[in-house]
Amino acid sequence: MRVSSDFRELARRALSGKWGSAVLTTLVASILGADIAMAGGPSVSRVTNYVSNTMGNGGSDHSYSTQLSSLSVTTLTYIFGAVMAITGLIIMIGLVQYVIGSFVSLGLIQYNLDLIDGRDAELSQIFSKASMFGKAFWLRLRMSIFTFLWGLLFIIPGIIKAYSYSMSGFILTENPEMTAEEAMEVSMKMMKGNKWRLFCLEFSFIGWNILGVLSLGIGMLWVTPYQNAAVTAFYDEISREPLN
Image 1 (spheres, one colour):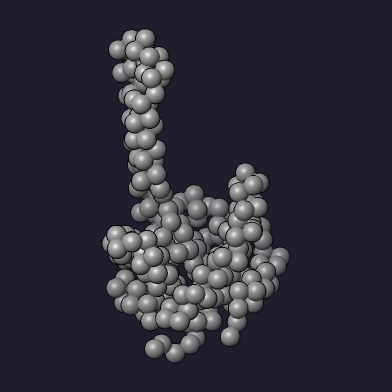
Image 2 (tube, helix red, strand yellow):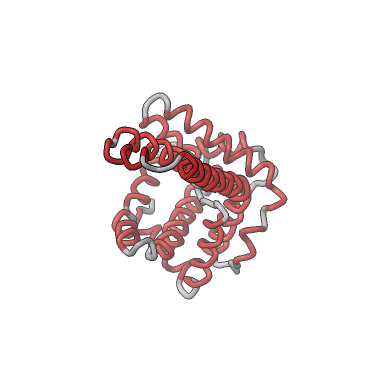
């Protein structure tokens, strides 16, 4: 049974001589809202929380309130309107990314599957699953809803379910005739006894992720394709195992 270091080695072999293509493909897919786990995408909630926290903190700061009181009502109206317009634009972009990123995520998965299997992997593949738009969007939305609901029972159940559903995108990509529900069910069966292995694999990248952040995010251009390829190698192995 392979361990984390084995999957990382498989990823490095697959990426050898193809780093440029992988970095570009992953970058474009990410900008479009794609995530190989179909759990990421635009952080609309973080945007709205930031705005609400900013406005809330402003009311509690006496010196800030004093400065605001010295501004004219018209100026405040313009500022408030600008903030709301920017916030609305960010949320709209986020929603568009979430929708488009659904089928682009499947395309990114196909790119990485071809990469791991040694087949030709090209940037255009991230758009290869556009015909599965409806099914891909429903899968992403369904995964998000179920993970959120499980998370309401405390954080740990939500995390466990996120790992249970984590292979759904891979399964749907390779089996387009399946429904979103079926892909999630197969993923749960496939991940029985494998959730801890995937957690260890992802945790093994913590050092790389820290370096990526410390490099002002530039390093993540290489870390993300590396991690995606390793997770794909992980899926490639467990998908060959008989389901319980």
